[in-house]
Length: 267
Image (cartoon, rainbow, N blue to C red; front, side, top):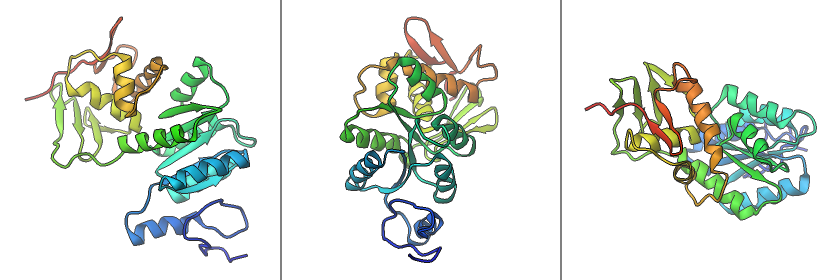
């Protein structure tokens, strides 16, 4: 057994209490040695499935931390600042929903939820907790990797040539190079999916985007079905950017059509 604080392997794998693998050391390594592979925290209580997911993600070039405990996941997320969390909702100690709420309360880290529940209500409930995507068991590991890659692309650096765009006389400002959104002078903390929805709508203000079009644009791949789940992301987005989410001015609903940006772009 190595003493606490010693990193016992070049790529952190299972973080087991008492084994001395300190995720804080890995975070320090990222800062000292520069850009490294994106780090994914896998929170899944079934050991075989956890290892299976980790193997596929590592083969795709990701650095992977993993745990079967919701409580430990919160500690690891705070210490290691992962780029994305794959979160099982059926955890034995702390419910996955609680873990999701606490993660969302402290950071914008993208969340990909795993669950055995496949009803539309369950999917929407997970998305309303702030999840960026939702995968039901059983699932294709290659599809899981694809979804992780798509979420991280949405959260990646924007093109350097882009400039900040203002809408509604400065009420809304979208700065793509800095990936920031300012509403009425205050910065809004958006998840990658919420950001993707807003940027898509702002491409052509006033144009109506169908749910199917939005879900495919923000996912970054062909998304079969579940297009109604975009409503959950819009609901979360409105909570963050609207004065009155029940009577939205910025992200407007077009009955039978979809959504549009209700503010004109400033010249």
